[in-house]
Image 1: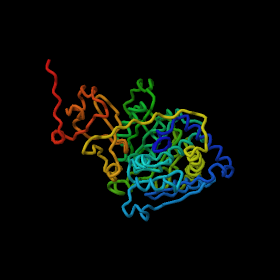
Image 2: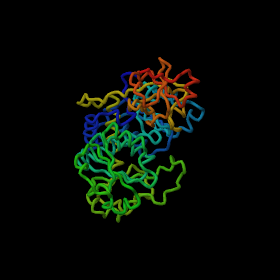
Image 3: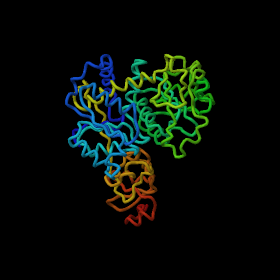
Image 4: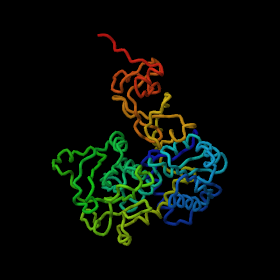
Length: 446
């Protein structure tokens, strides 16, 4: 809806906005009971299609501390969703008079973007499948800002399940935007997805480099580490050691649990999962590193480091309340920022095809197709590449048609530069092209 500000992705906030939100969060944190007049009369609705403890309770605590009220559907399996009601209809009802803001968690990637299309009140993404979790990212960034005084230039280790953790994906994008460096230490088989690495490279100028993580000790003993830097560092061009760029020290270690609820094979293949304990923290490179975790944890962080002053994960969870106070207040219009710098609106195009080219089976465009118009974001003109506007997966197609000329081209054809983006039709193969009335483009005679 026009004029309504949503938080679907971490990209929906500019860096100046984030910095001001951190300052407001620090103000709220200084006296958590001094701001109960700000949101008086406002109501937030928690729509959680997946289990949650910290995210849901911290949002509800934040709203109550602002002086507002909350209504909760903490288990949507017992709601009208169990009767077949679509997400779009639920959002229209709840935003139509029940609440002033909707906090949504959903198992389908892109669900928050769909909800924002139908909601007359702000929608906050509290996690959509394995896609994004922007408010957890803001909480994590805020913790780095508090602990380190800055985010720019920090070296942050991302460890554990980097493939299915939506928290990791949002965090990686945000760290790259701030100019921090990422050291990826995945559990074997759980590396960052290709689409995340591709986006880091194309949108944020990140250059992956092989890393020599021997100085990380046990933390990286069974992992192939990768160093991701958002700069174009001339110093890396001078690097010639075949073992990889040496990781001398890091500022933070961000551990994640195995996201087994999203693993296609359940809990199998986790014998060599990354673990962090006293012995791991004894590595010289981790001497000054804070240890972070979005929680809940399993065995990836040992209880014996809970009392270590570098372990801040319980502080990290507590700070989720003041940063979410700032987020709620800003989107509801009761917290005013000085900056007027907003990120540009993303430019999406409808997919004019009988077949949705998104390959992701858990994309909201596939799980709830009745209310979804497939959309794409153009990421490269030559060769032509596009990503799903909902889940960010790269679209799969062999040919691209023009809806005006009814000709189709290969994605590498320079003739596609002459075709308007809103005239693209993505085609799986020549048979589909013929069935839809498209013919191969005729090359001009020379």
